[in-house]
Length: 388
Image 1 (cartoon, rainbow, N blue to C red):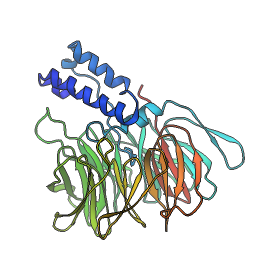
Image 2: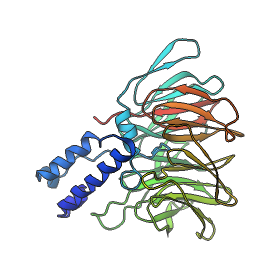
Image 3: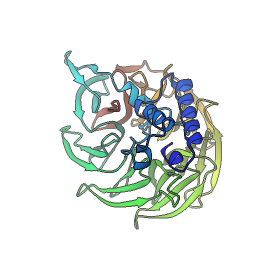
Image 4: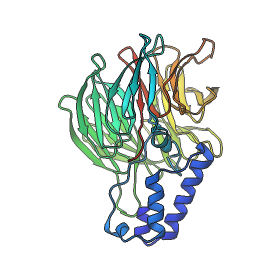
């Protein structure tokens, strides 16, 4: 909106706000954030500060959290922003309670579904991964990555990275997708330093190019760049190898079963051959107004998150079954063997068996979850917070 306004396209900027608000209201039944509404009012008033320069807007979050995109399936951004206003009371295994406020990671015992701890991280956590003997959390609200020891649950480091919205684990690095900053950053887990930043913003300053999702596999870092491109990055040289036109805005990416898997704003799951970059299969997922917002690899197949979980056979790229919890699913994490953990918009963490045969195991965490991971014999759930 700001870029359109500064380019002299006030009407287009206001129309973009209308489209964004419509997506939020129709899909989630909620209004845009106060910051976005303030920007609309400033554009209507032709506020001189818009030309002088505004503080950087909060980055759109990915629901891995995740979770995770306005007109490109970004509606889930408001889940973390709006729902994160609530304080959450969580039952402990010893029968007591622990107060978990936004800006924390909740630690859950997978055997009993009881909350055993909370860890304070940064502002607006949106993504979480496990790797290099640590838990890594992307905090979109204050431009940091938090590193946690999964055994002691102590914070080991806080690393500054612009606009982090997604994370991926490499053989010798943690890779960060930097949202509206339009970059991919490389963190050295030995030093906790950002040792490389790869700029994907493009040449046109009035057409912002965001980086929404990231994955590592087959000797390559794969980044979802706004527009229609899946970008290949050589981790050995920290440079872009090529960009693949995928026909629609890429939203999230994962690797596994000998392929790269991508969901797009056009409502498709793409199977991409990693050696030739050829799209070898397509599957329509979701429905009009109910677009996919994430994709993950599991022992049971490829998981596509819409409002339910679509379990896709990786060999045929056909829908195997749909797993429904009766609530909007924000994020999932695969556990060893059959089964996975899913967290919903309302804040219910539930273990799901792919055959839906076992009785459900669930924890009620309250509103505001954004992402989930499994590590160190526990389930880790990030809790979002509101915009200031």
